[in-house]
Length: 266
Image (cartoon, rainbow, N blue to C red; front, side, top):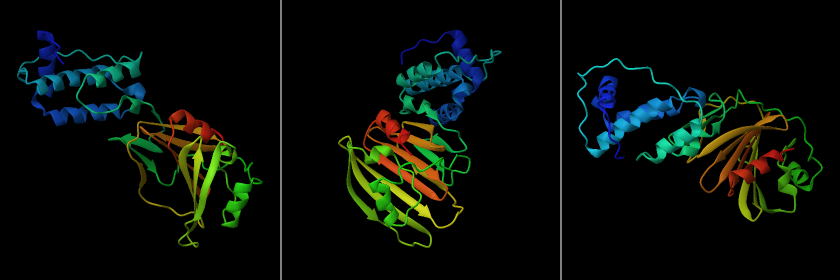
């Protein structure tokens, strides 16, 4: 970054105290600001931090912190926020993906940090009761019933002609705790799998579910339930819960196909 700074810019840098911080400390400030809700992100502050970071990384001399100036309050530019933040990240050496700003899931349910989405394992604040079970007469749901899974709410795309079931495995280890089934399939010629765990009781688990290398995340309402969709570079995952039954879907497809797949849950 070959930006030339005016005397005023240098005085503001000195006044901020950033000139005395290490590159890692400045990066931490940027990451902390990015973690806020999109409406609260101060793009000017992020850009200011990046300017100081760029100077430090290029070896330019920074002003002494004993120079003072009355700083003006930085104005948050809400218009074109995503575009502005995207451009800032493009021109820096940080490796944070711009797509992460599309993470439209309440923090209490799931939040993004360091490339990973961390989700409440119990989905306490999500809607986890299906409106109905429209596919109960399908051959696939009837077969799942032979393993002890009932009721079941799955994507209708699973039983359409564009999906071929590869195999269904009963992976239950302790039925007094849960019945577990894994389905492997091809969806539009792309690999996918669905894991279903139906618990015998309403257990209170501790910890969080971690989805790695997440580029974006969103929550949609389907069949009365909150459905979480996470996008990665080469795949997507879908996570939802209906009472005592938890569903995890993996799809080697893009976010648009994953969203279509999720919206067919009945």
